Amino acid sequence: MDEKLIIGLKEGDTSSFKGLYDSYKDKVYNLAVSYTQNPQDAEELTQDVFVEIFKSIDSFKGDSNFSTWVYRITVNKSLDFIRYSKRKKRFGFITNLFNPETGEQVVERSDFIHPGIEAENRELSKYLFMAMEKLPESQKTAFILSKVEGLSNPEICEIMNLSISSVESLQFRAKQSLRKHLSGIYDRLL
Image (cartoon, rainbow, N blue to C red; front, side, top):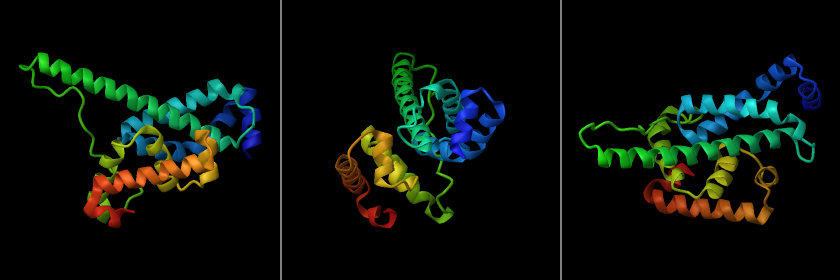
């Protein structure tokens, strides 16, 4: 099915783009929301990913699965968004330091909980996502792709362009770091 979509996309067929969107929108959104923890930001990222896919479809060579390519674009767009948001937060903090009479917070912190987590785990998931924000990008990506998206290590290797041992090491270090940050509640989360 992906082959027909790819050919159609390369030919500029709008129904192929709709088919691609219908097939991948939930996967892209769920991965984006795992990074942003905000539904509006994830929706915006989802749109950006599909625009990028449409613009870059000619660069897809078929060396990996199409889904791997889509995941890679989503991860890269998500990481770019996070970097931009961090710069925006730093700027907002500095602005507030030099302009204390406004008292406005430039960037608000989102308390969004990933939709796949059951209602009774909402408080625990909040702590998990807060701890995940502290992970280095590579550890966070390996952890999200494995634990949140449920991808296999070989799939993660393709997406991240790393060896199996590197991915396993990143996952191990991510778990160790999360264990340290979450101490008492770690066993109930993982």
